[in-house]
Image 1 (cartoon, helix red, strand yellow):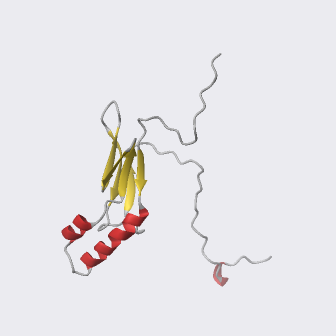
Image 2 (image 1 turned 90 degrees about the horizontal axis):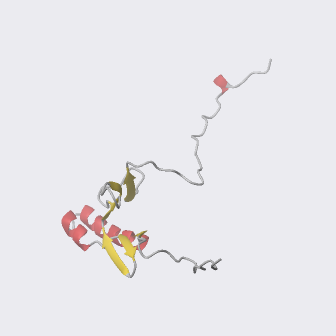
Image 3 (image 1 turned 135 degrees about the vertical axis):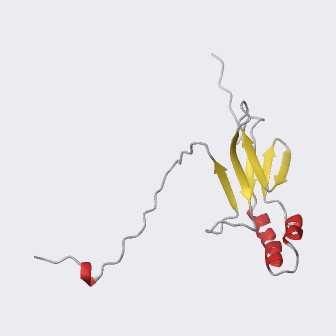
Length: 128
């Protein structure tokens, strides 16, 4: 029986791609966003000067962009989209989101529950 192949830690097949979100570049881009909001530069000028915070690392190449789309290798169907929208953040303040119409499974799930309303004297339990 052949001996199993020993892989080094973090050894992945060559066809793997890694999507990286660079938080430092997001913060650098916030400077241009604030300048555009203050009217110093236009929004188009700010977008042209902002560094792209998303990158795809594949092999030895590193490609930067503001939107990354992942397609199914056989059907060509769009599986997910990673978008950086500095001028249109979500209500929570998130500038980068991952959108998909595929089924999503959450591992190590933790569910948060809204807190109960504080007890008031009107609805306090009575002892009988």
